[in-house]
Image 1 (tube, rainbow over the protein chains, first blue to last red):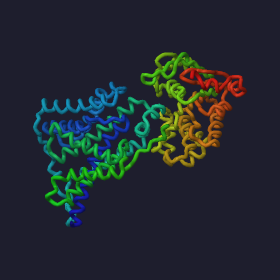
Image 2: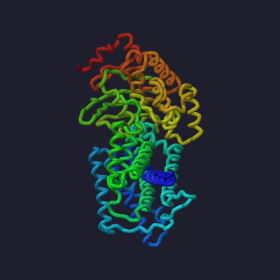
Image 3: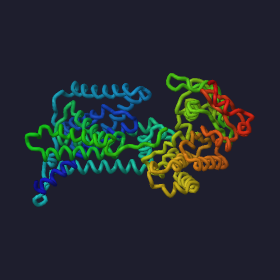
Image 4: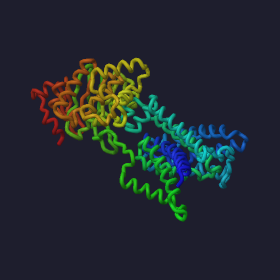
Length: 297
Length: 236
């Protein structure tokens, strides 16, 4: 393989990895605070896509549509918390599982009924398809934009989590929710905040996802939540930075296999990637970064 | 300062506390002793608001607080140092302390309080950038207490602070608790380590099988006027 091709694939993997990292962090954010997977997480990507579809169709610029999509996903996530999670705070695990699953089904079917069950095109700016050339090296514009947006978002979030008292509250609640309450951190507030961040991340990832695909479909949230879930498991459940790492590891596995596997095996890339995940978890069942919480007696 | 009357608490379908009455006056160290499973932790968790009582009253500074949230109780000055320390293992020592000061919005006050805590616990200052989980057991217990101090409480509830510590460290922790009281804190101390706890306590309650089996001055228990062993046996 030429160094040019290698560089290009490396950037592709980083770019896909930053989308997976955003998704995984979004899913892990709610999981670590609530101890509960939000099965409607993928639908946040979907609503971002449809808000963009609608706005772009109404002659809004792609960037404006993208910002609106992110805002809408953030609000939608907070609304889901209010409707599907908050009233069931003391309910058993399975109840919450069903209620978030119900939200996912309702959103998908609303879109099928109100918009269309068929794929809708979202015209992407032409510049995304262009290629930058540096001598013999060439990199796609979209992977670079994806990487840039992904890293900036992750950086902003890291700064928020590490440097603000709300960020500290989230990290504390993720480690030990009950003790966080003993510190005066309000349960409702920190959960709402976790959902807002989760929605924001799903929105940013959704924009990047739509820019790659150029279409939206009612079930487009399935692949993102699946990837996010795998990344979160690789990284170590309940660990925020582990989720980010897991996202990049998954992307490098997928792109690496795509490059290395002979042509006739290409259709099975994802299967091989999952086998690799199984091997990782066989060696490190607790995930790459294990969460050791305080001694509990 | 704290008055509890006929407190009944269930843990799931099981009644764990069957009508507990207890009071703590300002400036006292009151021990709650008793065997494993007597309901001591349940009592503290109910006072602080992590559990809701079925019946009974909890009055703190003339206000009824039963069923109030831990967040509100902390704001009112009640802090719990939970059993097993439960420091945030993946946060640094400094972040643990800042989490403890979460409710304090006055930045200067927080920094002053932090300086005070570091003065009290030089070892925590030395290790302020380390992850909490890397501290030894005794240091973690100090961190747990220091973290609770960051909210500047008036009433501190300590759940088995000596658990799992070497005898010498147990002595240090109990001395620290005494020192905190001398600085104006009121303390409820839950302990299995009865004899050592009595040494620093003003009064004690013995809890067994979810009921108060004996209560009195610490001295009476120590001198045998009240039979500690008999009270421990409870209804059994």
